Amino acid sequence: MDSKPTNLPATDFFRFDLRAGSILSIELVPKSKKLLRLEVYFGSLGTRTILAGVASAYPDRVKVGQKVLAVLNLEPREMFGVQSQGMLLAATDNENKLYLTSPGDNVPDGAEVG
Image (cartoon, rainbow, N blue to C red; front, side, top):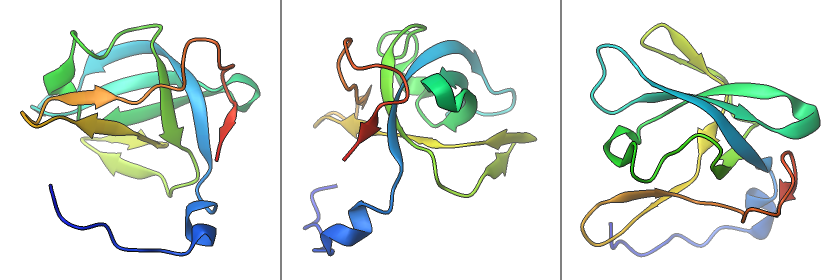
């Protein structure tokens, strides 16, 4: 993934509704090797079900109570019979290990990022 990033206008970035949240629960998605079903709390915006392809990082780098960043204004997507209501932000290192991005422990759930 060392491709050169494409330059986009900043206005494209600001179209995303990026929010901080806390993971309330985690479960493996049956019949999937990559997906976890996460319930994530976003303060006054409530709780969202988010499917994320981060099973390889569980349970070492994906934990209940962990603060995460997510995009909330994407169209819902159904996978394996479950509707995902957002997308978590994650990073990979040189060994392709996944790490969920975090706003830090003191950022309140639902806080906007941007």
